[in-house]
Length: 330
Ligand SMILES: Cc1cc2nc3c(=O)[nH]c(=O)nc-3n(C[C@H](O)[C@H](O)[C@H](O)COP(=O)(O)O)c2cc1C
Ligand SMILES: CCCCCCCCCCC(=O)C(=O)O
Image (cartoon, rainbow, N blue to C red; front, side, top):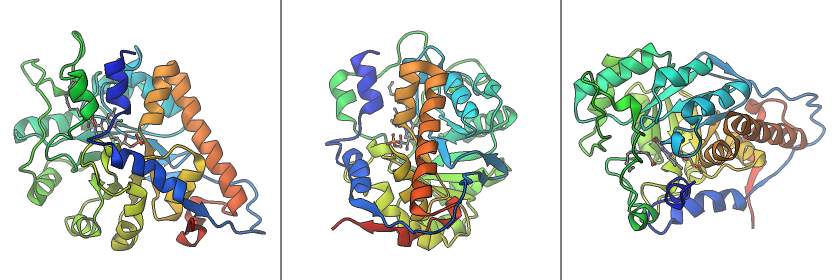
């Protein structure tokens, strides 16, 4: 992979404080295991919006998979399906959603609502028609993050032949993805009128926004700081999770992403109130290393580690993971 592309995948915004904080937060949190819980075999099955998954570890939406591997997003989706989970297709995918959907498993579609509502609605309808089962609306990006590595590398365009294939309009032209600083809650209500799919907001960190999301009829939340790629200095996502979960009070599913690298991290996130987690860079690294098979192996590794950690912590099912199982290291 070209160094500039590797930097795009690995990097974060500014000083990369939030990127590091996402990882450091899991280093600080310790598991307080229960004993004599007779868990037997663990049961990691997780149901989200009607899709039964083998694991609570999902694939986060990430851009430009053809920069990582010739199989592109379709290979990532194949790996996710083989691991019994689902992938969230990025609006910045480099293959058409219809091609990615050929993998056959459940997919969700991630949307940056565009200033042009007619085009935005057309993208949503296209994702629906391709079989996507939920719409993940990214709300942490009113403007694009300042990513110092990309600025240094001058990474501003995709190589010839690659494009955001789901940004093609009815004339066949590929539109640029525009970040949209005019978005407000009214646009979520508007989206509700466009689609019957569950709407999941990605990028919520403040409990007041979580409460507003529930009041606006949103169906799910992803606690996320975009993997440290947007607001540098933002709170680590797992540190924001308990307050968001408390505000939501189980009325809608809460998911979390950012910095999850081991099954024990998944356990901590589930214990602090997440129903599932998403992983970004670990999947991209696997894709670059070995395509669909490596993506499957990576997701299976995280799931096997979670299973093992649950046995040692005394939990048979994710629902048995509760906040009392987590302590902050002294
Ligand atoms: C290379 C890259 C591209 C990303 N592209 C998108 C995107 O298109 N849409 C989006 O909502 N989030 C995007 N994200 C953020 C991820 O969905 C996710 O929030 C983040 O990667 C989680 O952190 P992790 O990489 O530590 O697992 C991207 C992240 C990376 C690393
Ligand atoms: C090739 C130059 C970059 C053009 C930006 C398009 C938007 C992609 C957004 C992907 C994303 O969310 C991310 O974190 O990166």
